Length: 69
Image 1 (spheres, rainbow, N blue to C red):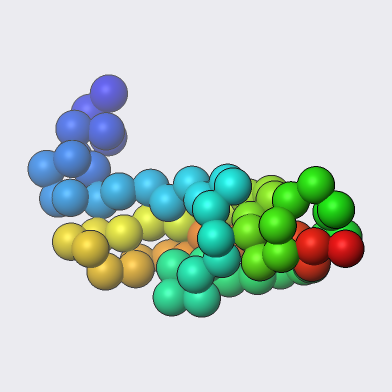
Image 2: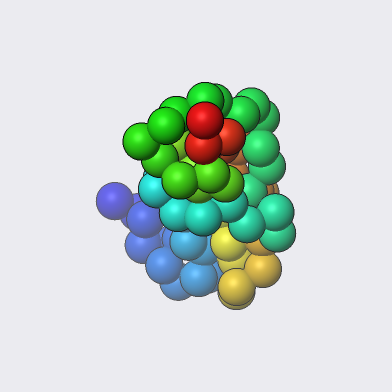
């Protein structure tokens, strides 16, 4: 609980982009997955959450991205 209070106080926000469109400024693509039911260039799996501090990327989220086919 103290850790979450410290995160809020210093404006440290977790990035959990599951289902969002891939953004190279906030995400690091680790792999592309062929998924016909998910549109191309959308995040299908989050391997590691990222973090923002004062709206700047501290660590990008590591994600798997849909290739759409």
